[in-house]
Amino acid sequence: MFNLRVMTPADYDAILHLMQTTPGISLRDADSREATERYLARNPGMSFVAEAEGRLIACVMCGHDGRRGYLQHLLVLPEYRRQGIAQALVERCLGALEQLGIHKCHLDVFKTNTHAARYWQGQGWQLRTDIDRYSFTREGNENA
Image (cartoon, rainbow, N blue to C red):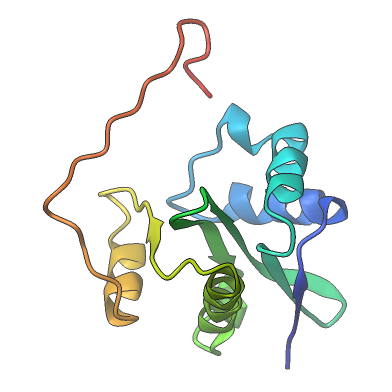
């Protein structure tokens, strides 16, 4: 059995451990404690964690720009996968977005992360082939 709750800055160390031990996740400067605290403050009540047996076992970060939602870092410890935890976390995020009148959500998956691609497509998410994403990083901030 697991319990879902809103993510708080106090969860950072456990979330960092999840990110560091999950294949297919790339840590950047934007994943720092300070950046995570800013993200949570800017998007209150949108990101969630799952706990079981007294420890954090899964997380998802969710934010929005007022029009569209964005999911990042859906992570579940391997021994807790295939129990509906990821789906429950995503549903919480989508529900929080809907309360704000936001009915479309995007996420990014590394092309090499075939496990994640299969998961999202199996959940009914559509791979967009009509757009390309471009990123710009100021010189000196290549790990942003």
